[in-house]
Image (tube, rainbow, N blue to C red; front, side, top):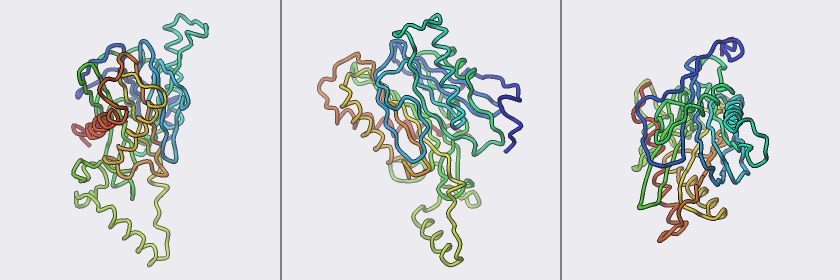
Amino acid sequence: MNTKISNDITELKPIVKGREPILKFNFPNLKIGIGEYKEGPTGCTVFHFLKGARVICDVRGGAPGVIGENRSYADSICFSGGTLYGFEAISGVTAELLKNNDYSSEWTTIPVVSGAIIYDYAVRNNTVYPDKELGRRALASAVEGKFPLGRQGAGISATVGKCFANENREFGGQGGVSLEVGDMKILVFVVVNALGAIVDESGRIVRGHIDKTTDKRLNVIEKIKEEYIKGKEEETNTSNSTTNSGNTTLTLVVTNTKWDQFALRQIGKQIHTSMSNVIQPFHALTDGDVLFMATTDEIEPKNITATNFGILVSDVAKKAVLSCFETNKE
């Protein structure tokens, strides 16, 4: 890795304008912005609730990187590349909100910003990361009703399908889906940088775990057996835990429907678990999966239980994962 190309010693140019494809949605008081450094490439994605939101956070996998896990409120949530260095982008969002609040230190005006990071160095030869300036610029450029899909923002260097070797990976990215049922609004946004492959509703691998010499998907179960037998016969350790480390799927669920904090947490767990249908494996030792669930508490739930609401959102979450790569090109 060329550590000479990094933030402190390279002139970086922030890119804050999203490109097609873009998900368009109707959710007043939610703004979304992205920031990217093409020199990475790496980036961040900021979700800003103009009137704040009540939140829960569900953390899975063996290697999470998250800020605000135990907070029940957020003004903004920031997803960032750059692994732990990307926490600086989250600080940048906080700094920009301080500026917007006329640099007030009053307790009730201090901005609450949570966030999480992905390891996105597997496909690039540098240590550029989303920093404070990029976080600030992403928030300042945020707009209502638009979410850039694919290899943009925090997902610009995300990859999937790396259980056996990095050569089997393909690009992931940002996915998003919007659903309105009457006055009930649901949004799911994901950044998919998973160890696992993406699987469609029929159980077929559609992204990752590809043998690029044959252009065919690996049979995961048979490959595991094959590697175990090979290792026994050669008396060598074929484990490639060092090459498939650094994976994470980040999820944000947004709704205008009011649930108490206990129900909100259980719904979040239900949705997060359901995503294992489309990301396999999910929540592995080298994953750091994080789900935030946010509600703006605008409508009371009517004619729907918390469990059935979770079923509905789980379907949206699966579609969001599948939307992260459909228009991507290697």
